[in-house]
Image (cartoon, rainbow, N blue to C red; front, side, top):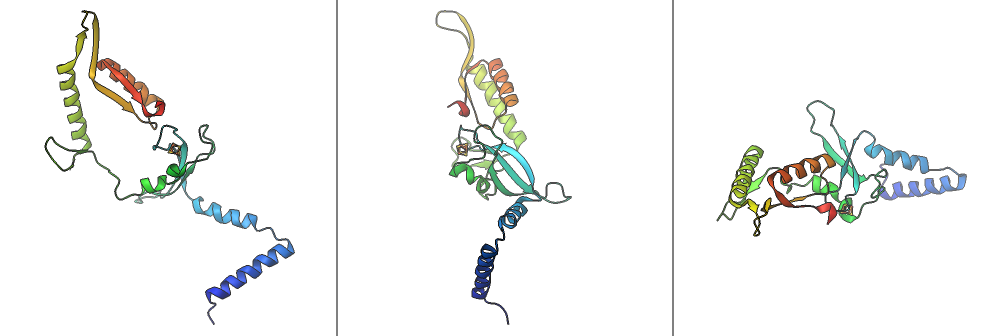
Length: 193
Ligand code: SF4
């Protein structure tokens, strides 16, 4: 006879009671079950992108090293070794897996042309070319060499830069060098706001 769900629950309850009566410690068994969930996964350390607190996270993926297999994110949790959050995450950070695995996530650059009502997918090469053309034109048209008193200032007030909390030190170093070389004075980062 096939056991019903009720029979199964009864057996579980009796087993649990027996374990308690005879002093079996089930904690190692439960711990083993939890470990198996991410046992074969690869760990990648990253930063929660949602706010300027910049909490550290660990992203678990399976399939990274197998041939012809697309890596799959299976779990995201706080990084206990990270000095900012020490393993904790707020509700937004705790839902990070839903942002990574989301069919509404944009995977290509998009542009909405002047007068258009819809966004258009473009390639990364096209996006970089168009951004470069606009930066050059804006700088050529609006660069300020001297202020109202005739003092040389060489600055560009028509372009600003806002970075994000996931930008690395090295990336920020290059950004500041590039922006300063263009004459940009408004440089800010979300992690400082
Ligand atoms: S986990 Fe919460 S507090 Fe931490 S960076 Fe993400 S959104 Fe900000």
